[in-house]
Image (cartoon, rainbow, N blue to C red; front, top):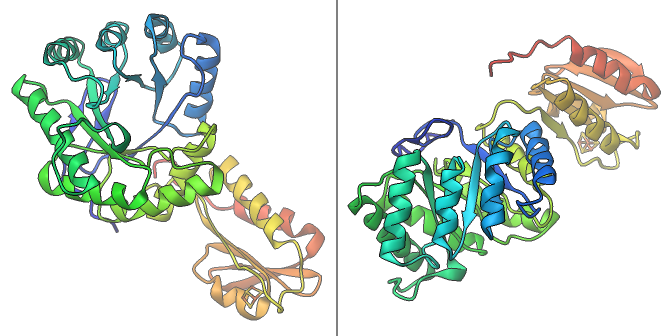
Length: 354
Ligand code: SF4
C-alpha cells in the first residue's frame, strides 16, 4: 500500500486537498465558458464519469460572469483558469468560483496579487499556483529547468504567505515527464503544500496517456499528488477515465474493476478474448462490480495464471471454463460464455462504501 506524503490540508466549503485524503480527479472544459449551456452539459457529463472538479477558461468578462449561472447547474466544484488579467480572477471569485488557477509567469504585479489575495480571503477561495515550464518568469533561479520551476513556485508561495494567505495548491508542470517528475520530487523536499500533478501538453490518445503515466506514476508511488489531471487533446472524458485507471492500478482508487487478460499465444483455441475482455470491463463498470476478472486464452495456463482473480474465463476447444479463485466451476459453450460469466459476476456483492 502506498504511503501518501504528509502534506498540509487545504480546504474550503467544497474542496479538500492534502495529506491522506482522496486524490481528486479533474479535467478541463474545451468549450468557451460563455457558451453556458454547452459548458454545463460537459461539466455534468464529466462529473457523471467521475470527475471531482472541473476547470474552465476565463478569457474575458463574459466568461467570468458566466460562472454565476454555471455554478448553479453543476454538481461539482469549479476552477477558473486565469492568465494575465487579474481582474478576471476577482470577478470569478465574486461569482462563486471554488478555486482559481493563476500562473506566476503572467500575473506579476504585487498590487494586483494583493487584490487577488484579499478577494480570495473574503470568498474562501483556494488558489492554485500553476507554474508551467513554458512560461517561467525571467528571474527564476536554478541551473536546471526543474530548479527554476520550483524556485518560481516557492517565490510566489512566500509572497502569498507574507500577505497572510495559505489556501494554496501547487502545480509544477512541464511537457517532459522527466522534468515534471524531478520538479515535484524537488518541491516535496522543500514544501508541504498539496500538489496538483500533471504533465502539460502531453499529446493525444495513447501518446498523451503514456507520457502522462510515465511522469505521474513514480510520483504517485512516492505518495506525491493530491489532485491530478491527465491532459489529452480534445478528450475530457478520456482524461477522467485514464486518471481512474491509473489510480486504481496503484491501489489509490477502489471503485473500479480490475480486468486481467492474457496476450494469447499459440495455445489459444478461441479468438475473441479481446472482445470478451472489453465487454466484461464495460459490464463491471456499469453494474459497479469492483472485482477482479480474468479473461484467459487457454485452460492449460489460464486458470493457474488467473488464480488471483475473483472470477475468470479460460478458453478451451470451442468452449470456456469459468473459474473462481483458480478453481474451475463450470464449462460453457463459447457462444454463451459472456452471458454465463455475467450471471456469475452478478452474484458478487460489492461494498458500495469502498
Ligand atoms: Fe497463452 Fe494460455 Fe498464457 Fe494465454 S493463458 S498467454 S493462451 S499460455
